Length: 229
Image 1 (cartoon, one colour):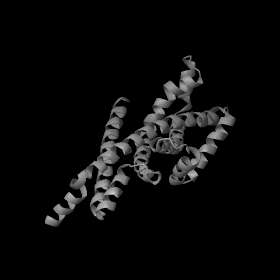
Image 2 (cartoon, one colour):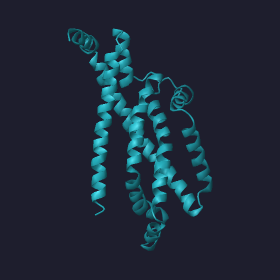
Image 3 (cartoon, rainbow, N blue to C red):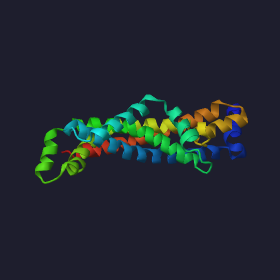
Image 4 (cartoon, helix red, strand yellow):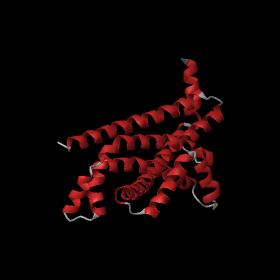
């Protein structure tokens, strides 16, 4: 017990090393939240383009670019995309590393969100779209006000899983020098030469975040289901 206490103090209390985890946690949450927003925007736009092509045959050129984007992003590792974004695309010295990470993770997430949302759109009966047209809506109004809300409810579990995966994927942001949660734990390890405590602490923090997110999403799912009655 004394040895446990000594190592705990050494890893987290001495020199206020716990602040490395707290600061890293804030960076991780910032990157995750902003990446999710970018991923949602890109994903829904791409999904609408692809679904429109599947349903009507229109947007052929846009559909080609959308498929190319999805193929490239889903076919290459996120770490490689992050490194390309940092060393090739955003090479200006004054560009924020957090900005680079947000863009890389957001663009990556958008490809997966696009296919998830597209599957939800295609699962909605075509009669819903025709009903919207009969009410005087044009195609895109029918899609936004009638089809997409139903598609969102259908794919919410898959979307929530994608967001949780994205949160954990941000742990590689340290490869470009971002001091996120994982990097904070690694800095503690390098100073104390003790791997167990900082790594377990990082893992537990990620676990708590995932559990809380899962709980909140389950509440949202229940409310959406109750609104169907």
